Amino acid sequence: MSNTTPIRERSFGTHDGTFHADEVTAAALLLYLNLIDKQAIIRTRDLQQLASCEYVCDVGGIYNPDIKRFDHHQVEYKGTFSSAGMVLEYLKTRSIITASDYDFLNNSLVRGIDAHDNGRDLQTSGVCTFSHIISNFTPICYDATTEEQNRAFFEALAFALGHIARLLERYRYNQSCKDVVGTAMAEFRDCLIFEKPVPWMDTFFEQGGEHHPARFVIMPSGTYWKLRGIPPTVDEKMKVRQSLPIEWAGLSDRNLQQASGIPGAVFCHKGRFISVWQTKEDALTALQKILEK
Image (cartoon, rainbow, N blue to C red; front, side, top):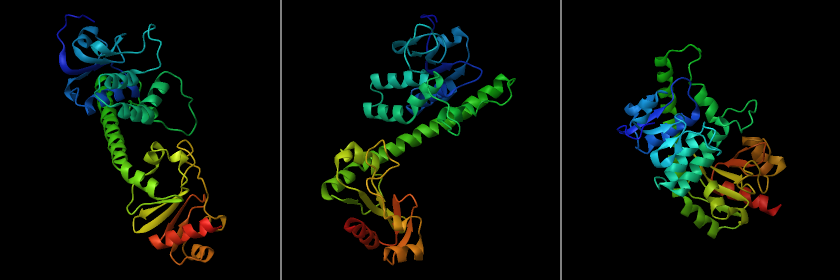
């Protein structure tokens, strides 16, 4: 690419033809952060056109964040990033996103895209990943026209942009509840009790929850209250430190009321990790029965 070609600010270039999750996600990240304009995205392998783009991803044979070039296909590149990982790393090193945002996006999305694009992840039957979903936006017919390919690319881009926006909105909401969770951790020992529904699990473990003695959580759930077990570690979210009583498993309404002796019983999951009660007092009574066993 020529160094004398005038650069069009806020432009983005990537290859034409079939697209993949990595360049779609790279473009979505830059769009989300208002670093490029949608109307300034071009799809081509023409090096002269690409030379005029401010950002170039997944094409061109250059990885150089200083000049905003993010390709991983050249033999010289020995790393593990796809263009998505390259762009995310660039955003962190340039302090465009925080280190915590980088870790969240990498662990919740981009690391898997990198692995898929570079052939490192195992294709498991029955498991659909973000990369699979983006691939499903590509035209079905192999002889699709350029216009059809481009239209499909921008449909995939809109999906990826919305997904990233929702991921970060949810993450920031979770983080905004961190102090509430920390207060409960300081106040309670056997069971964390919240007066309103809050996302608690991630920030519980961020604040040393693995070493906290609490075994249960009680909080509102719609018009009911729920009592659920706490996982032993952040990596064992499908397990609990203490299961609900086996005689409650899979019961609801009158059957659970009889088994538990609590008139406000509504439901207990057969997996014995969560139960639902009509009032906070019912949930507290259920907790007391469990702790007394």
